[in-house]
Image 1 (cartoon, one colour):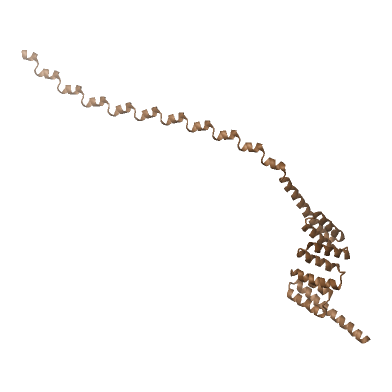
Image 2: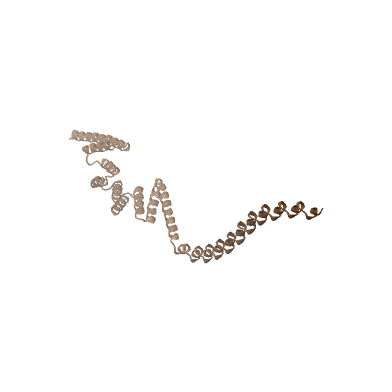
Length: 276
């Protein structure tokens, strides 16, 4: 009997060593993105021990990474059926349920994880995130603060979430103040409306004075004044071209008298010479 027990122990130890090696290889393949090799190594583990809790845990995370959330929940349920006091398993189930939109079931899983282990900071962070999704900002900050108090590594998450929540709150207050009745009155105040369509401005645009400048009687007189017309066709200029004085030079009575003047004719047959 002792030999058989020793033999079984040795076989178990050998199996465990083999499983450890397979799991190590599976994790290396997972980190390098060789997902098919990862799944192959995990299945080799399950061939040796179908109920290996660590292998089930790694496999559930691997399925979530592949966005196979329903399959991941099946593996987690199998793990819980074997051992139901693992807070990490309940936390992972909550993550998968949240991805499927089952918020209430996810919250229950996070709270079960905290019941098993009140110092599970990851569960507090997950509760904070799901509270933000439900627009419960104050509750979310409480969860983030609890995680920060448990472990310093969550302090950065708390500060970032706190800043984003405060910023969102300030933006909402600004938007509300923009839509307030007071501002609405400023936009459509009677005073501003009067400035846009004031009678005084309308008068400037179509004032009688400006219209008079465009078509004033005085300007019309300048364009067609009697004085200017007289310059173009004045009687004085016409007289220069065909004046009676010039015509007299060509055929004046005085010149005709020179050619046949009575005085010269008298010299040729004067009565005085005949008397001698």
